[in-house]
Length: 228
Image (cartoon, rainbow, N blue to C red):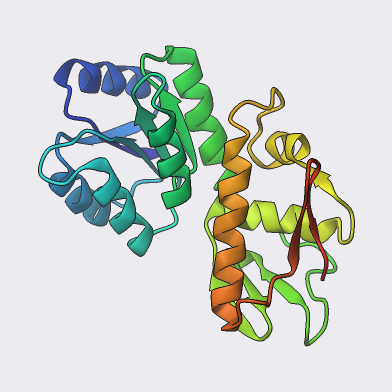
């Protein structure tokens, strides 16, 4: 049974989330503050983290930061209605998706399912390697070797890079990335692409130890491509 960690301090919402997820076939573990949430994250090894921002003891931002230090598991951030600054900050900090409150049950389950589906182990494919000076994807480690150095990636970052590398030299539009990486054919939440690419490019540059070593290119008004 797939385990989901819910960190939410509102008892009514926490109960509703537990009931909904349990009925959908998930095993639910819960915490009502950030400190206990981190303890459960380490002890229970969930497949997905459902994280509220306004938590006591350690807030959601601190939990997200420490989660990303320990794990690349999918994180679905629960944000206040219309709080664009929270959504942008969360995506920049490494959240995989966000859901504004209040939200519908069907939408929550759909986002949980999509995140878990994307985090399933990726199959390898011919052509991962592009020579000594190129980039090689390592599916079993969810990582990339760039200029001889390994960069550990989140599931979203890996899928994003895999799609761009497969289409070497071609511009992949933001809408195409949302559809094929985020399973979001409606193209909502386009800023997710921008911040995921920013995180990915930063990791590749840091791995190479060279701020100019960037195999990805942003094509203004269109999307992104892998230059190789």
